[in-house]
Length: 340
Ligand SMILES: *Cc1c(COP(=O)(O)O)cnc(C)c1O
Image (tube, rainbow, N blue to C red):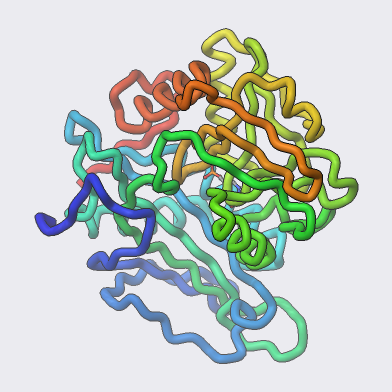
């Protein structure tokens, strides 16, 4: 694809050649179908349209310097989609179906995999929704699982430059016993209003607090939150946050670098004790945070006073990217090479 400006790709949708689909009907998953249409024909009473029976995943395929294409921990995404499906009463796509669909979508769009060294990657978006009709509130009996891909650049336009975020006090994305730990669209719907308010005020994202007490940090918009204090990596333990695979991997890398890892409740006041803070997720890997503002309380915390990301965050970011792009040894067995 010569007409794509790989180095300046936004994190957005771009049409590719094919997507893949499998329907769950009469208690069985059908074979994987390939489509060249960007559209799906769905029943107007589908539960995915009315009752939020919908979940998605996000992972990437990376082009290595060695010309090999790697998927990063696809099995973790498959398991998480299974958890989401179970969480909101949807048919559960088997691991093999997930893997075959992802591999097929990547293989059939090989020309859209960004070249090594551009900082871009092929974003893979599996999704699952209730396609069967219901008018009364009840789970569907038919589901559609599909996978599309699109080449993307960094999520935050700042790239690895530190961003500013804002504490949300008037909006929660998830309730303590709600669906926050599932990757479902409803959580995102709940986050849109405050997200737009934050963007208008010049913030890159929102910091959500626990909905019950507004005392502890939950997560940073579509990304998990972490902090570095001395030689310790700290990340919130909460039943209403999405278990990020990036965060899980960073915890392993931090330990491997000789750091201590703490997964526990993190009170908002602790922000004044941290040396570095950041948001993490597949889209941006790590977004270092330079400022957290809590306008309603008239408080703010500042980091990266020299304008640059902290040393530990930078090291973690580089180590994870090196594994994803195949530049460093994959000693934890996280990558899967896609054969063509
Ligand atoms: C997807 C997602 C993340 C990041 O998870 P990764 O597996 O690291 O991509 C974090 N928070 C929310 C709410 C998410 O939906």
